[in-house]
Length: 236
Image (cartoon, rainbow, N blue to C red; front, top):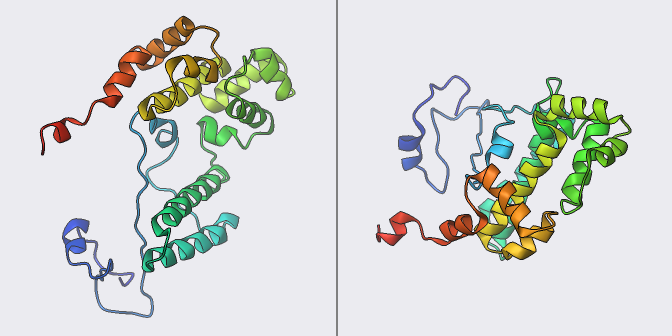
């Protein structure tokens, strides 16, 4: 569209799309082009990311990430516009890479975000977070994480909560349970395997933590995840 075109509701505009394109207003040398897409997240884990983001993230050309994002968008637009083997796979991976670069740009802006996303840019706290993410099965202690951050335990605990919003060991539990929910939803690990993968010494300890965070037992959660959606069950 032209820059001065009046906004219109998207649904009726897209109804008239031809080959995936729609135009609002006459052609102009100052046309504004919009490339629209979406990335879907599991509802149970989406808040880990969406709670940290504003409704709109703007990455400008002058931003060091802007050039990389432009290159990725060009690649993605090319993939969408051609029919080739592995097209959907390439599109999905490019979309994920695009999201990561957008998050990096957002995290690097002057008004840094709160939560783990912004904390990854902090030398000490970021090192501890990366260690937790790399080995979630390890029996992490506050002392170990503080040493990785080169801080005293009290200073580390205070800085971590200030940046991430929760104490270090509480974050570890929440992260483990997010991974557990994902594994149970996908049914990729048995509960006994999941106990070891998330660093618990017994199934009862894992179940207690899971119930506290999620609100149901691991078995109940997995059984519910296996059930088909109600609309599919009704044939609608």
